[in-house]
Image (cartoon, rainbow, N blue to C red; front, side, top):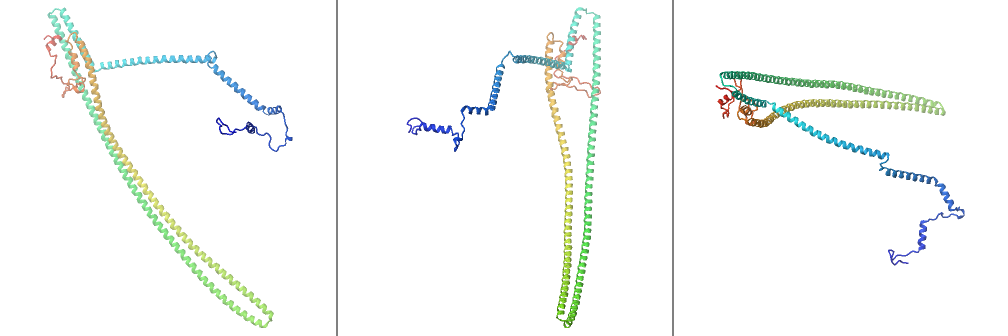
Length: 547
């Protein structure tokens, strides 16, 4: 029967019974094997069968139940832990809360400490900047030029105060002779003090010049000692080189003597070897002579033996003839029985004679064979000795050649080491010379860089000083413009502190130039442009000099 519709269209439809029978066959195979007698099979009930299975599988089921119970308890414990983990009213929850609160407090305290540390660092950094600025300002004020400028400032203020005092005295005192005498006395005392100060400055200049001369002399002596040390070092190096050359000559001479000694020993050894060879050859000739004599004696003995054998054979023949003659006589005299006896005796005698002949021949063959073996052994021994002697001579020659080659290699290695050491010394000297040149060049570059940096620093310091001096002069010239000459003069002087012309390209440096005479005083200051403060009459009147 074919299926008309559906996914099995066109296929044959199987009957339900057939399909069920097939499923039963597949799902329920036969419980009994084939060829079993059903009368021999015991049939039990289903309850009995279950009881038997339960009795057999009780341990397995108990173990499975125990494992399932343990697993269920463990899962319940884990679920309980998960539920209790987030509770806050338990000991563990309160401890956890306390730990979290402590951690939070520690973090807040640490944040506050960090903020305090940052503020402290900022404060300390400000204090360090203030200290650095104060140190720089103090160092700036402690320079000689600033001290000179401040002394000029002090002089300007003193002059201002003095002018004010003079004005005050002029207003309060009458212009009489007593006042004029007192004024003259004060002027004389001031002039005397100025003269003493000038003499003191002169003495200080002379002492400074003497110190400079002393320093120059010390520098010259130091340079002379350095040159002497360099000359001494050069002489020491030259002496070391000479000793090195002498040592090298000694080594070369010793090497040459060693070579000559080795050559002499080699020739002596070869001479001794030739003598030994001649002795060995003479011994071999003596051995050969002995062998020849032995062979000759053997031949002589062989000849004597042959003669003796011939004589014996002759005697035997004669005896045989006599026996034959006697036998012929006896034959005639005796009967036939006696003939048999005689023939038997003759046969015995012949047998005995043949036996003796055979033994003698065998003995002769053994002797000849022994002589031949001895001769072959002697010749073989001589050949073996000659071969061994040649091998030993060749080995000895190879050993001498190898020793000579090793000696030459050793000498080459020593020469190569000496050349290498000499090249290393030369390279070291060249490297030292190059290093000295490089150091000198680097020192010169460093000196130029130092000079450039010094000039830059001097220019910066000069600018700073001029700004400071300008502000001070501006502040001091606000009331009156009369007493700023010391400040202007101190500001015009360069950082050198001398009376020479200022170097415009080197930060306004004004060096000191000493006179080339016994005084050694500083040369005066010349200004070709003239001074803006050349009104000496006004200055004298300002200072109180009335004449």
